[in-house]
Image (cartoon, rainbow, N blue to C red):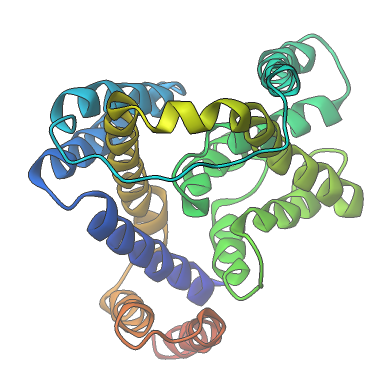
Length: 284
């Protein structure tokens, strides 16, 4: 279990490194990422991540507008604007109605579905960004222990497919009904549904929106903010709950180099981390 937690540290560090090189290549966007990380580290409000993303978009409009615009082609979509507007309306209604139902005596499945739905709705910039959202939704209220959460996150790297499937693991082990196989199905539906609704809703309008220089500047600022969010998550809860000794740091360092320099398969790093955790347990 401890070795898998250390694997999670190495993999999140790899994600931060790769995203920073791509999304923060200049001083302006690097500064946005740092400010976003500071907001998450020092502001305890549950709305801190939404606020950081909004601020990143606004600052990006100022810092990133002078950058050259990307040359983008036309995207033909088989979705009408009426269908797109209906999908966006459904997304917003569920985002606000589910917590209301959960807070007014609705069955536990509504609050569980809401936790996964909100996590899927607020993710921006890549699957790894779901880590702090799910941690806040499940570990903070005590529905899943921190050790089991991070160990499962590390093990999920060995499974083919999108990282969102980690939700199925949480749905099985969560200390709230329904759990087990029904909880896994509810978790997968909840975490994937908002992305599907947003995709259908935005497609009819995306072609005209993304061609605007202001929109591209906002997206650059938001992308840089996402790097900062994931960087903050790398420190807490990932690093602070896993790395406790020099041996732990050494195993993380080996995993990070294998992933970033040697391009080792994640499955190999997961197995190595599990074995390394056993060895560290024997010698310490």
